[in-house]
Image (spheres, rainbow, N blue to C red):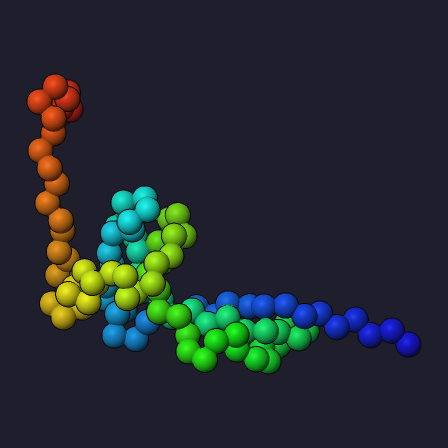
Length: 105
């Protein structure tokens, strides 16, 4: 008799409660498509989650375009944005173009 048992890991992602309305800039690709997520990795047997690999889920900022992830503790701008409330995006000002740089209209 032969039994095939598969072992592996699976990540479970969900929007982070209290941060659902926040869209922020990705520090890797500079697109405004980064969202706060809760990520929890589990050990699976036959694709059934059995044991978590950490005591608490990770709280991260993930870009939907380049899939770059960063810990939420490393982004103080997001906490400031959360306290402002929904619908208010704080854009960082851009520097003016260099004097010899052509401008397109």
